Length: 160
Image (cartoon, rainbow, N blue to C red; front, side, top):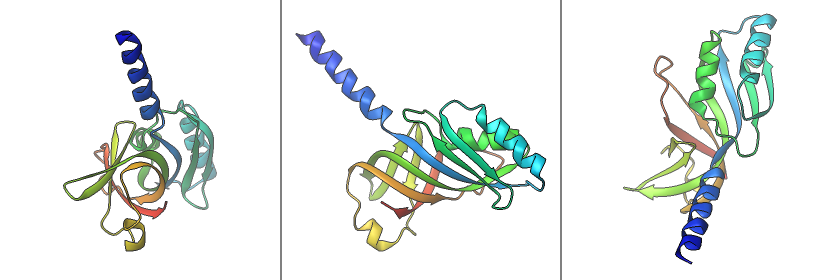
């Protein structure tokens, strides 16, 4: 009976962590100045496991990624792939599911080993709606350091 309880607990833990994931990423790409550049980046990104669809727009200067269910992709992995293809990736709009927690008066959400700290410039009406627990949100992530990609981000929530 004790083994059954342990198995049930492990199943619940694994399901809750599997539900924390990126859903969509609209990644700004700097340095694309021709159609072959955009095509090459699209081919490079398509090699990543966990993507459902991808579109790279030279006109917008963005890569639009829809992620598959149960993916384990991170924003860091996506930006690293952009960088490996010869471009710079800094700002992104992300949609994600995860567990929102408040610690030391700061909100954060963890997704696939990355931490998204809720930025203080998130609109007050959105901040007022935050509560601990499972949440789906959309927000803007700014990455100022292109040389050192990390797994900690500030996110300005734009939609819950």
